[in-house]
Length: 142
Image 1 (cartoon, rainbow, N blue to C red):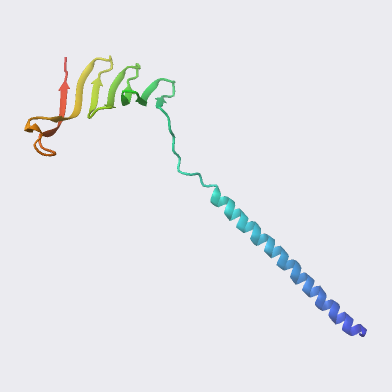
Image 2: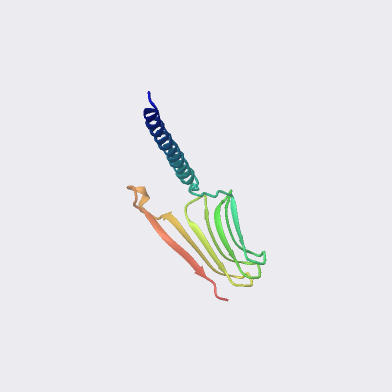
């Protein structure tokens, strides 16, 4: 091999090494990009579910304004007046039906209501007969 052939081979080898370096850098960049996308995809939080037996909402002063809870007798939602007295209470017990009571700021009950399913008459002749859904309520204005 003469000097010109060696010089040509060295030039081609340097070009090949530069090309190989560029290819390696490109491969690293692509792998980092795919890794980043994979990590970003995992960063999404799952659907948030909060479970508790009771939730208490307080205002900026620390006063209880609402309670939502599950108790042995059923579940209830209670809203409180500024003075800390319950003004609205909705509850559903273990049996059929729901109840609602309304009170004024002094805590005096002003209204009661209930939704019940009752059987009236019919003697149970056929399914669905003799059943009556009803809303019962009392407004107390004294």
